[in-house]
Structure formats: structure tokens, C-alpha cells
Length: 75
Image (cartoon, rainbow, N blue to C red):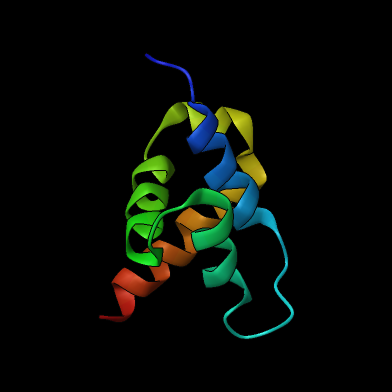
């Protein structure tokens, strides 16, 4: 099992932040990570399935997994 990369850690850190205004998160994704919001969410989704991410920040990853599962059930 490979460890988390710096980009993986940056994605998790950005996701853990609180956002006060609409568009602030998407702007931070572009400015801080240099990727599109679509790519960010692809990376985040893949991270949620990795045990390394769970070990790094179990509260965040478990919360996001619950949100993802609730969205899947509602479809």
C-alpha cells in the first residue's frame, strides 16, 4: 500500500475547511491545487476508498463516506 502523496494530503486538507461564501471552495481548488473542480472531486472520491486516507483523517473520511452513501441511496 502506497502512502498519501502531497496532493492527496492537500485535497483532504482543503475538504476539511469551512467555506463562508459561494464559489470560495472552487476558487481555492483552482488557485491552491491548480486543478478543475471536476478533477478535485474525482480525486476526493478515490481518496475516500483508500485506507491510508481513513488512517490520516478518520473523522473527515467517515463523514464524507456517509454523505456519499446517503446520496447513492437517494438516487
